Length: 294
Ligand SMILES: Nc1nc2c(ncn2[C@@H]2O[C@H](COP(=O)(O)OP(=O)(O)OP(=O)(O)O)[C@@H](O)[C@H]2O)c(=O)[nH]1
Ligand SMILES: [Mg+2]
Image (cartoon, rainbow, N blue to C red; front, side):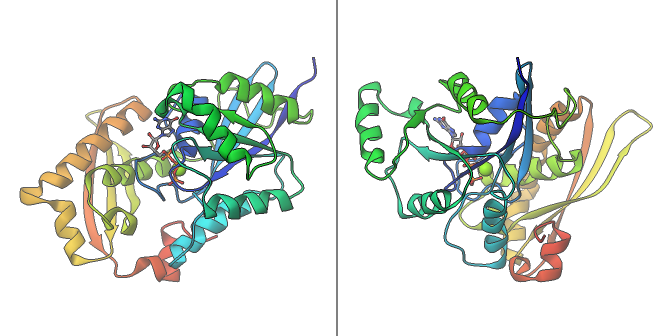
């Protein structure tokens, strides 16, 4: 049997479940997820290897109407991921109807030369008998067949993988068997800290947060020491993050540490510092430093 391989980008509106799918496929948390839109900011490669071939999935930021320079970076990241790839997976969600943003993305896909697959995620959230109606509604706007899946329960993901392999060209194994992502540990650790702010902080606060790892080292007592700066846009946000008697920061640190320890498979001491950087989302130099500038 011939070996198939290729690069497959997953695009869609924010919050449809792109990163959840990637983590499910790889069986590890390499891309952060949250109940709020605009969680992912960078393109992240997730490498899926089996006997039949290798798929390099590219998780991308959700595509939406942009407001600031960080938004523009994120949406550009998503569009850039369409260059030089073998297949586009466009994700829709069963809990919503076709939106103007979906339309915008779909037009882009139709204009590109690459083949595409369209998936309908979150089918575990709807009643079984509603599914045909939801699909019918979507097919008024979409010409291709939809593949219904659940990234949470894994339903029909086997079928999705078979469909992807069918469309991929014959090709080499690009990455070694045991490699699951192109991201370095330092990036994933910073993301795990950032993710917790999406769960624990109100309103706009998480959207103005960036995390930079300043130091990582093995201590003599076999504890892995990590120092990270959490950047916020406003003084008031600093107060919110720290919380009453430092309680919030402690909570963020505890939850992040659990994820990081699972990732590194060792005990971690996480040292978090809050820094104020006014309007960093519109500041070229700061965006670069935080990794949000190509
Ligand atoms: N019930 C259910 N929830 C899901 C499913 N897939 C994703 N979710 C939830 O939907 C929310 C958004 O998931 P993400 O994976 O962060 O979405 P995303 O498309 O990566 O979002 P951005 O990075 O903001 O573009 C999270 O709360 C997930 O747990 C699914 O199949 N079923
Ligand atoms: Mg995401």
